[in-house]
Image (cartoon, rainbow, N blue to C red; front, side):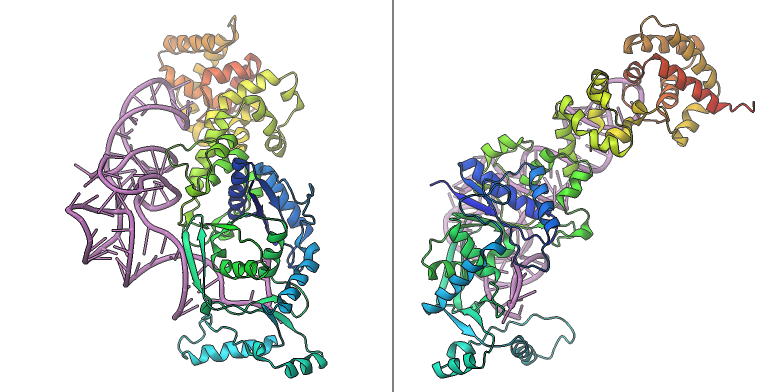
Length: 498
RNA sequence: GUCCCCAUCGUCCAGAGGCCCAGGACGUGGCCCUUUCAAGGCCAAAACACGGGUUCGAAUCCCGUUGGGGACGCCA
């Protein structure tokens, strides 16, 4: 049977790179095996969920190219795909569990519970004052022991009640697809709440209910859910449903080995998109963070990743997010991106800098592509085209003062450039070969090294000390602009009072 | 504290008892190419956490220690 997997984010924030990678693994698994990738929004926490967050998450997934077969916008046989629309089913499941004796009503109030927890903590040792030491206290099952009369009396008093699952004794085992066999002793699992006293289901209840109804066969999710797994397995068994396979993916950490968070830098995929990273690079990078094809391959396209993927390749340990490597992947994918496609994707960055012109995709397309070709191997991110190649797209060039000082403000440079200007103007054809020949001839005639003339010309024409090969630059800039800039540079060197 | 997971270069991975005095990639250093900057090529430094076993033989298996992470909610 074709596997059915799901990604179930709660819309309480942006699409985090960790979540994105989990979604990626699910997607890869489904695509590899011809399965179904379901997207379900876990928006039960009404206060923290919002429409905007949902859109942000969907946008992030789309940007990465993770299309879902069932879920928001596309629908599917198991609709609705918003958890908030499935509350009745969750409640029904909880009631069923009470009827069959697998769960019971609990009339304990939050205050009572908190008091017991605190007492347990105090009893365990007054040490560590002030320190927030989570208690190991587990619900004492007092409501499980209630007699029929006691229950009737509480109901008559209209006391609010929650539903708790009655955790059976014994060991719960499962064979995790990335970690291997894992087992938990029932004695370490408390009777957890399924339905809150306000009638809302808890996470444990709703995931299982939804996963059962959506016929999920493989649950691929973050490592932090390992300890929830035995509880959920118990629920599957209690309702007589088949238990899915589990694959717990390790977490992504920051450089300090702590769970990756905003203080480590950007964590939202949308943010990376905005910073000029390519979705295929992010896709490649994320896939290799904690997963390996088993050999030395590193550079993948989406398709080759689908072909190579298997859950077995996921490693068990947490992985540190390495921004330098992301940059490298971006650069590699940038270089491999067809220039015509690159041109289209550059539009946003160019517009941001006020340098976009629709002619770049029309009559000046050939020129634009030639420029991009030159800039490509030097760019790490999309905005680098604007930053490093701005002089191609605007005649208002900013001179790097250090570059001007070292390459232009040297003895004789102004005259050399004037000679160069004259030689270039006299040229029959204006291409890399002819301009180079002309420059070298000028340098030789004036007894200066070609290199220093090249450096001076570069600064004069681009304003920077680093650029693509000077002669390619000159050719693409064209005779007129080159001339204008050489003139402007000489004006810069000897500002005349007139 | 209790339970669970993890443990190979700074980082991400390969390694599923001999092929490993441990391989690739990012980063770092050097060299080459060269008009600068990149790209590319070559080279280098850099790791099996520790201690016990098992075995003819262990990075690989077992136990323990230490270290790191996660979970312990009427959050998801």
